[in-house]
Image (cartoon, rainbow, N blue to C red; front, top):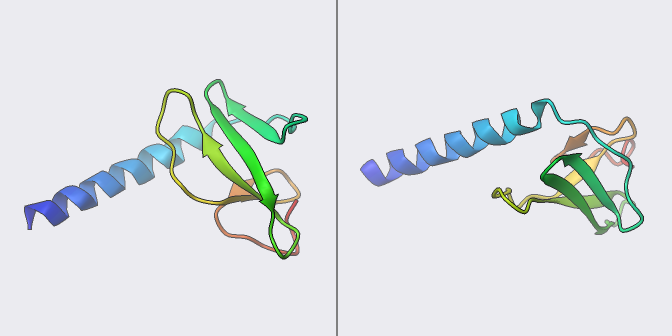
Length: 89
């Protein structure tokens, strides 16, 4: 029982810090290598386009842990884990 409580607390902490970490993020334009700098230590790196033509990204940081998820960027520059093929960049 304690094991499951610790897992739930850990997941909640990662979820909360992950969301608050990006709250004040400003996004720059992609570099020639397909890297978008979110802040001083967080980058979104382009992987490749999926079957719908949407560019897939993953987060990278030199100093902090990042979640292993695929991110998509919409046409207004907002990143999300849910893809909208009609609004992807």
